[in-house]
Amino acid sequence: MSARFNRAWRLFATGLSFTVFGISGLFFSLLVFPFASLWPHRASRQRAVTMVIHWFFRALVDALKRMGVMELDVAGVEVLRSGAPAIVVANHPTYLDVVVLLALTPRACCVVKNAHWGNPCFWGIVRAAEYVSNVDPAGFVEDCRRQIAAGYTMIIFPEGSRSPAPNRLRAFSRGFAYIALEAGAPIIPVLMHCDPPAFTKQMRWYHVPERPFRITVNVLDPVGVERLASHEMPPALAARSVTRAVEAHITQNLFDHGFFKTGN
Image (cartoon, rainbow, N blue to C red; front, side):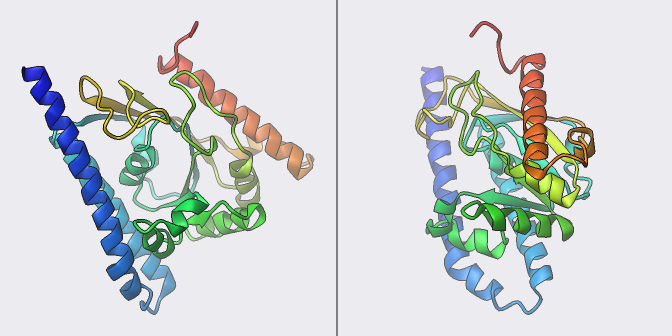
């Protein structure tokens, strides 16, 4: 009975958290964003909005932990909090990955799917924070380069969507590599893991696991793009080289850390 009650509580707490998240996003889009758009200084407006989002997601993660829905383990997170602009490249096992990374990174900018720009809960947030749409490949690279030049860390999931299975990655797209080559910014590989699986591509929000899920975040050492591609390479070849190297590096570390299992 205790286990059943515990699972029912976590289901209720999960639903409540997502409801609060959606209502808060709608409130921001309908009320806060119109006032924020009147802010005369664009750069300071973006800094203020980015910090509000950071603290909101910190509060959301803390609430999920306190309610017994999730646990969080982090390693090497000081790199994300250093304030130095970089490109975070992470695998994407769960829906909550972006929430956790934004909660851990004070000055962050995200690459957002085009669908979110019309979402009633998100459209005001992504515009006020000046997140980057991936709809235009050429403009995408320039927009990301500009955000890095302004001092922001770009958070990118090169799989493009959540991983297809607990032991597999989607092929990485090359967008982050073009950004790194253009901006000269370091790449920070990040390993994301969730045990037991929750909020995966195959699961709905109400598919609550038997016990609280644990999200583990391992931030690896930054990698300079000059180590992955020579200056003499044509841009397309250099981007391919960087993409392959980072994908192989993350995949190998997922095995080394025990997040991926051999033989599955």
